[in-house]
Length: 154
Image 1 (cartoon, helix red, strand yellow):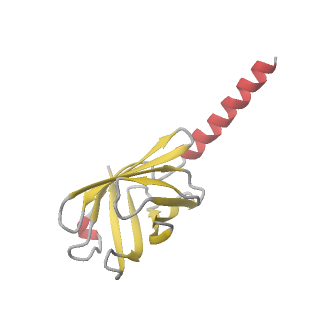
Image 2 (spheres, rainbow, N blue to C red):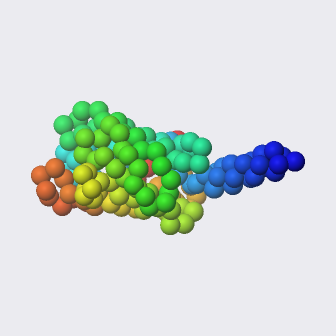
Image 3 (tube, rainbow, N blue to C red):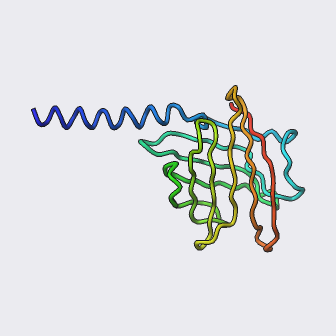
């Protein structure tokens, strides 16, 4: 009897986590639409972003190019709880957080050595076919930067 109760409780927890992630409008593969984006000349670009459910967490995989046109790749796995989780593959950041505001809006920040280097917001369009990412931060030279990137769902 106890085993059934425990098993049922575990199943309910995993089911609730799966439903929460299933409602995540960010899940999927997103490609940069440069024509609709406002990214400064010579700025790094995230050309493909993939959000995938991993258990009760989300894995965000980012591929792009740096200011010199060299390929970049980074990954973040965590929850939308506003707490820091490690970023791997990005020489400019080592931690980051995401926080869900509503079904289509997520805020985020990237940090290096405990200092926020970039923060922003991701808003998925009502039809779910595109999303807009606004970011402001400081580049490696200490200059203030901002950009707006539009992504199309693949």
